[in-house]
Amino acid sequence: MLTVRGIAGAIALYLASAAIATAAAAQAAISPGTVITTSNWQNYRAFMPDGMIALFEGRYFWKMPSDVRIEIGPTTIRPLPKNYLAATEKYASGVRLIELPDGGLTLTNYRGGIPFPNPTEPHKGWKTLANVWYRYIPHLAVETYGLGCAIDATLNYNCQAYSWVKRQLSYNTDPNAPVEPSGPNARYFTEWFMELEPEQLRYTAYLTVNYADLMRPEEQYVFLPALRRYQPISRLARCAESAGMDATTEDFHNGFDSNLTELEVEYLARRKMIALIDPQLPTAAFPADIEMPLGWPSPKWGKWQVRDVDVLSIKKIPSRAAHYCYGRRVMYADSHFASPLWEDMDDMSMKPLKMIALFPVKIEVPGVGVVNTAPFETEVFWDIQRNHASVSLDPALGRPYYINEQAPPEYHDDARYATPAGLNLIMR
Image: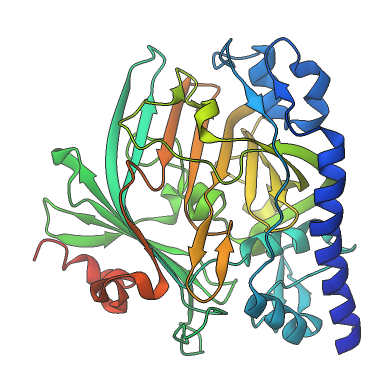
């Protein structure tokens, strides 16, 4: 059992390896000012995820634009929120893994912060994924106008606008965040999502509820405007794409929304990878400043960074694998702020199926500071087998968004935005 001093040392090791060493070593690996193009990309393939390499190689229908320019800038490591780190120091030494009879894992005594600040074997991969699951996010985030655009094999596209409200209810470390009552019904986080445009989709809404108890399955509900009421969504529908886009329920929560107790996770490597952090998102209508048809960020989005990432191979345990969305998900998660930056998915035959690029947006959280782990980002999905892609921009067109106490009073209504019954209030 780790002592308080031991866990503090583990936190210091975590921060040192993920911050100071990352910044210095990464910048030495590829010098700031380097520009990666289709003519020299092979010199830098060691810093790319497998899916990005495939886009440069032209292996699939989706290919890197011939005029692509990826300019490397300095690596910026922002400190994690002090309250989140304080919770790590206070509680991490008590977190324990529990092996389940079906071959899965869960944990106990988690109270907030990083559950495993220095993950080691056994089960290093699962511990690292738990750090991703419990990464810092603000208590409340409100998107007033996001944009999702689907691109088909004929290279035509259509877009939809939406709003969402995401809130973390348990294990909060933000100042003045409300405390979720403990007990079997304690919720970890909820996501409320509503279509705004086009008109035929307007008011269609979804609510996802994840519980503090990892063993309790996630619940999902949909509000159907034609019926004027909500209804639950079957767990068998988790692998269905949503509203013409390429994300399944398993890809929600900013790239990963699966039940940890049903997963086996192999830690593959810690390596360096180029990633677009803190992008300057387009403020004009899609596809302005986007490299089409791939949906790739143009140089106007900003400079890329060289990051340390933890590479994980994620599968369902055998007893849960039947009829699942993916045979394997390979995740490249930032080693400092623990958010996915890229993911490659295989189908159940272990053939390449999808790729996701994730570009996290920096925001300032009141009383906390600037962070990268907020729920605002751009995600680009490429479906390799069906030659389909989708781009989501959060926030879009320069529209306002809110964090914690910045949000207008109506968004703090838990009953409206975090319970199924609240969906029935949408058209009233």
